[in-house]
Image (tube, rainbow, N blue to C red):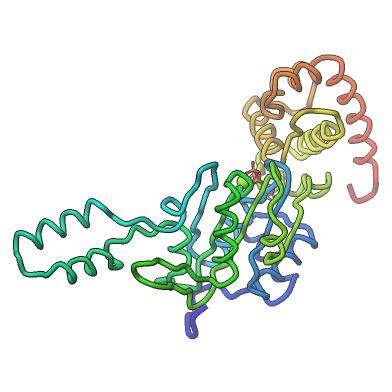
Length: 317
Ligand SMILES: Nc1ncnc2c1ncn2[C@@H]1O[C@H](COP(=O)(O)OP(=O)(O)OP(=O)(O)O)[C@@H](O)[C@H]1O
Ligand SMILES: [Mg+2]
């Protein structure tokens, strides 16, 4: 954060402050995650978040940008992602126009023109290059490199250089180096392993499914309109579902979706008919739905009703 910038939020000075910061962004983090975020910020290391789908990896970058008052620069990875889409590209159309205009005016020699059209104004900056630029206001941006496991290995190798030196070399211009490194969050769904070399440069954290207690907290924050008793049943059901042998277990995103769907339907308590007609909010594969629908859902429902009423009777519940 630049000196004298009184309006920009300050970086957290402890794990407690980090937890509070994430909470301000409506993110319910456990102690271990808050510690990882704090250390990544403090040590200027990229934060590498790995975990199943929908457990809140991407959200951390968004919340950090929002609560720290930084610009969020997002690089969504995919197979075939290359330097032209991730780093920079020359604006050929503008270069052509410039050449034509110079030819018409006849005021530039070949060498000058060649230099001119390969200057910064003809450069299209993509996310990685944007992230190294000095910010217009506030501190350095948050760079989210999302779902790195989808990109190819050569891109990962390229990234290694950028994340070690905070520098990108453009042959025609030279090296562009960040004055202050951005806050980097890398996420992976682990569809393939990311190389050790890259992981070693990062602070690694495995984002697990939340405990029932934390998931209930998340619902309180993200679906406040859902009655408390129903939220408890929803969380118990989802947690039980995660113990089943399914192709794709529901993430936190699905829990929130389901809670909101049930609230829309004015449901106050789970019953077999409601569960069966709304399972599509939780499970996204027909085989999984077929497995759970019917007697399995009934069994889970019976079990969670017992659990929830026992929990309600516990002091402090
Ligand atoms: N701990 C949490 N506190 C608050 N909201 C959360 C939490 N975890 C997940 N969520 C919510 O769940 C949704 C999914 O989160 P997110 O998109 O970050 O998941 P993801 O891990 O990136 O998933 P994917 O791998 O599918 O991209 C978001 O709406 C987010 O707000
Ligand atoms: Mg994500």
